[in-house]
Image (tube, rainbow, N blue to C red; front, side):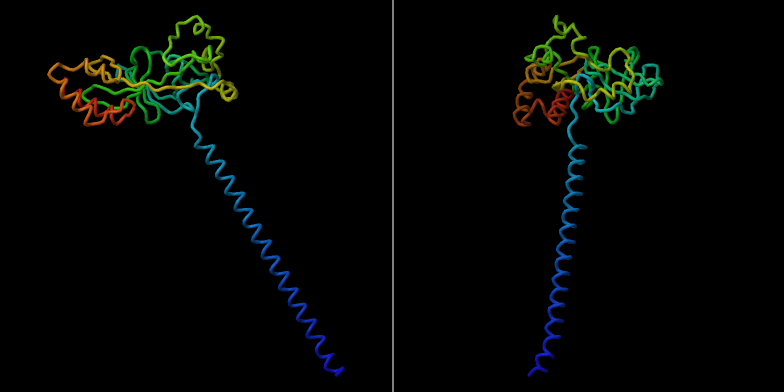
Length: 261
């Protein structure tokens, strides 16, 4: 009987050791899997944060009052059949063209002789002393977009889009502390670009028909048409379900206008 007990004891210890080894292995596997999960969550979270930051919509401010987030490769075309390339942007105070000089200063371009400006994939022309973006063209007639900055709201807090910039408050430009004016150095402006107050924007749409600017709305377009075309116009607007803030709709309207000039 004693011999039997002695034979069993080693077997019991071996089983206990094997059980402990399996337990240790299981614990190591669980810890390893937890580490893998935590690493995945860390990488995923970082990636999502960077992605969100990358695709966050750009908003101009008083220190960086530009239509584009960065100065972008562009081309200026002149009526003398010449062109020049530069880093370009559009300043929201008057929608003026700015460029980076060889001395790394930001300067306003002279408008004389400029017939077209391309910035990235966008095309602009000067109309009424400001740059307007071309959305569509038909027989030399255009749909254009004007980006307006609500500077008056920065003075009063209650300013409305399209308010005159000739008010006494608006003339006090220094109180806005707008960046990009008076030929600043690019490096200094970049350092300050996050310190400004946010600027609200609004897009306004127009047709340029035979060099005449017409506001994109039903009333103004109907004034342009001949009397015999007005019934067809009303039918077209109803059937096409024209939306005056939709670029696709505005393109359809431009086609209709050109067909009835």
